[in-house]
Image (cartoon, rainbow, N blue to C red; front, side, top):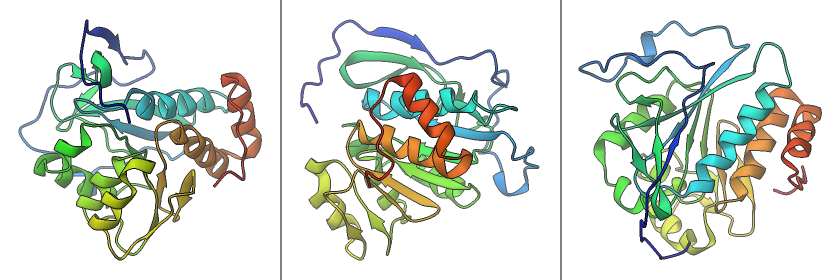
Length: 238
């Protein structure tokens, strides 16, 4: 990943969408996902975790894929939203300012959780609040996805033990050190373990997301999505 961490002029971006639930007040404790009555699985909640210095394409790529794919079926397949530890702007890599939809305390229970990477993971992997939340959500979600060095956060949460994994090429050795019993694939765009799927660096998250769309909605929807995005997707590129 690039080492330039200069913020420059912050570019303000909001990820709000009219199709998403209205913001609710922050509660005093994390939501109890185990006791939450989930909605029909015809529409899946898909949460993308944000934090300072997150790599932009790591989260924007999957956000675009699932948002586009969801509208090729009726009802909409995915309710895509962003979540951060607290309310307020997150400053992504290279100074992009992003407004998450939710904080941890009022986030709707995700059916799919995406943990992106970036230089911020080096700090956030030692953040007990985020790591505990990831563990909690992972226990209740349908799929857990990492992009790039987001795998380091899953590893810190103990969620990659014994699995096949990958991450950004520059962080392969760091991942091996964190999960010595995992099989690390430095030459794979993504690795699908069933419930846990890891992608390699940055743009590889788009390939992984299209793979998940094909798994859940069919190859035709994934192909329509890649064509709309004008992205050269190869379904066999694992």
